[in-house]
Image 1 (cartoon, rainbow, N blue to C red):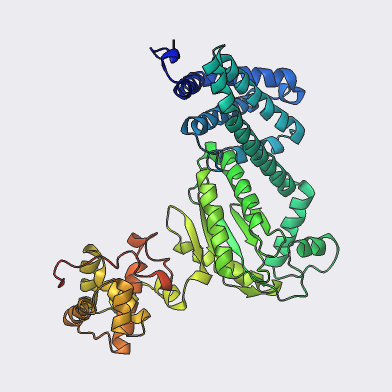
Image 2: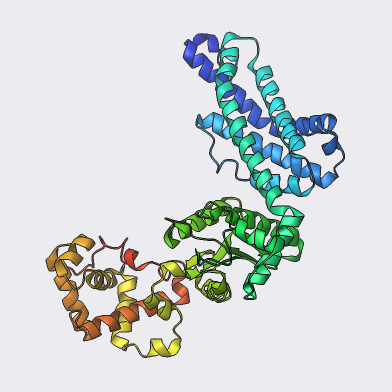
Length: 456
């Protein structure tokens, strides 16, 4: 009997599915005990783990629990495992490498944990044909999870071990300080390290400087965790190189400084996309960053200036974190973001009032101004972009002129309106919504919103 009914009354496929659900539900309820068994077995079979302290073993148990629950979720939902399912394992791999656990011991411990899981699953399957078939039906998914997770963990371990090599780390730090001071590596290990990262001094290779910081200042009790997060982020950023080489990426006090080189066919937009992907991936692991990216510079001599640019643009990142990339910001937007209260006071109050009211109503007039400018004052093209009738677009232009005294067909008036919009977008209350929008994306998302008073 199982769950109040007999599987013998079901058809073959239904009985197997019922048994599979029963087995997985029982395992889910028994995860803590299974994790204790797994840790005890790891200690008994792997001397390197037996020699560790209580905190280390508690961390091992936590990882076993997380893996068991992640695997059960995958099996219950009958889907393939994804990187998001096991994002927690990257930092655990880093901690094992930092503790001096050999990769063979680390992977052996993982296999022991998965063996305990499988043995328990088979035990719960019982002697019935439906139970045995249910266990067999779970075998392939179990193996896929183990292969995927072990590969992910091994790669993360090796990545951090390579990054954290004491000698390589010292050489990278020395090189970074030389470059930030305006120096040029010309001989020995420093030159070799520069060349390994695509930063040979005799070239004018295009490069950027990236600065990343954790978005929240750590409490005293969280300093170790904070340092761990920085090192994990630093290792991840090091993978963003676009020329086939590893990006120079170094933890420098409370910040991470990286100097990615743009290889042939790699533009700054593509690199910024990669950095955004790194930021998004780290966020799934609980690491939230604010990242500033400089303009493209030619050669290592420009690195000090690019570093200052990257630090400056960090001010544009909202409190919740994100990427502020100068290659994605127009000069016009940059000037607006840097404007002070005097610039805002110079805006005609009629324009300010209209924009504030329009924002509260969905921003359709603001979107129209942007679309009209982007369409080079072509009303029909602007209407197509906004997905509205040209008559509606014309109506909006009249409303704007009536309320502000500015005609969108006058270049001076249009520039004044665009400046006012940019200044409004740069206000702190709009952080994270519009102030980092690219010129090509401005106005999207509100194109189909119509004012209550517009003609239909």
